[in-house]
Image (cartoon, rainbow, N blue to C red):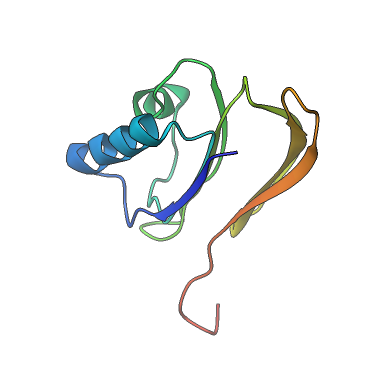
Length: 117
């Protein structure tokens, strides 16, 4: 399993998105956790421009204004989703790794530095 987690600190620039795609492609990532995307919404087409192949699934937790935002992306030929919980602070996906069928729970989490939050 090749997993990556990255606090991207915003996905507004083409240069940043190009860097993300390049890393995913070179490392042949199977699951990616992105934090602090600062995206209030994200489309499948935008994820398609990030991911290096057509066979992907994703879940996202939208940013609130210019803070937060999470995206979890996976290669759907490697991981089969069975359940998901999305909250403003985390994305939890549950499923099985293909072909061995190992059951896994994966969590992408972001917490602000402000202790009151």
